[in-house]
Image (tube, rainbow, N blue to C red; front, side):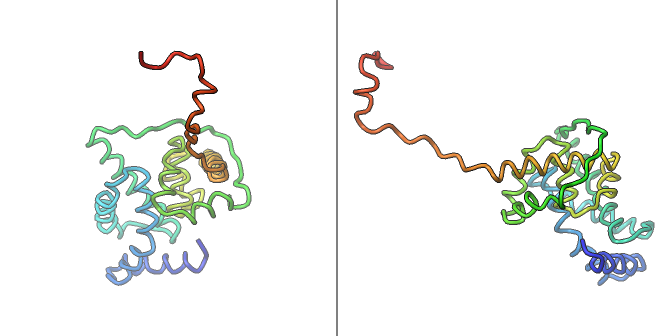
Length: 208
């Protein structure tokens, strides 16, 4: 996220805190797409309902928020994550979690290969690939790439150390890059008619 965009969001948040409805609409338009993508990765088709609940809480508590545009994105993601986990618990679905390793790796070159490839896919295709990752990697990638959070903000949302989130994001994007670079798998072609007469001669048929 560029500095100008972050400054514009920070200004809109400040005005929205003072009761400016147009400014709140600007905040919503700036944050909702990434937030909804993040929630789709957590709760699937229920994402819009969970996002609506999250925005009600955000609107209610906005006056107590202090921070810049990036901080607001992180705070909104935290609210949404809590609502998503509550939603999963109510439906009896336990979110899959795995401990993150507490080591630190810098992301190579803004992970251009996987991120650019994901941008070229449809939202559904990209989310399907991300959700196939191990849970810790999937949520880190969702927060960094889909929701647009920086490393420290994503770490605060997850309650993890920044180094651990960088590691999970790096490994997730590396897996995605390998998946996207792999050649497509084609179903096996049926054997030519009559091939069984030469290759399978003498074998007992499947059915007597």
